[in-house]
Image (cartoon, rainbow, N blue to C red):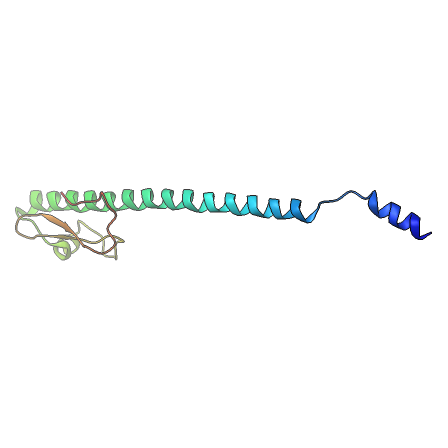
Length: 115
């Protein structure tokens, strides 16, 4: 009877510990690849958002200059109705005299410059 039980156990199919560990290692490698791929997508999105905010402020400056005959700072652009009030993710300051835009130093993605 005991021999039949041992014989039945030997014939059972299943995964060995090594096979299970290999699957876990492969899943870990794949998850690491996905994390780095998503980070690259996020960086490109941040850069696009920053460039979009710079263009929005530049267009608002030109519209303000066309209507008022002078450039305004960001507060003036909001007051004059060219920008909505709020907190942008990337902050640019506009010179009220020349209309030049300057990006805030903290958190601005590489490649996003005011012009």
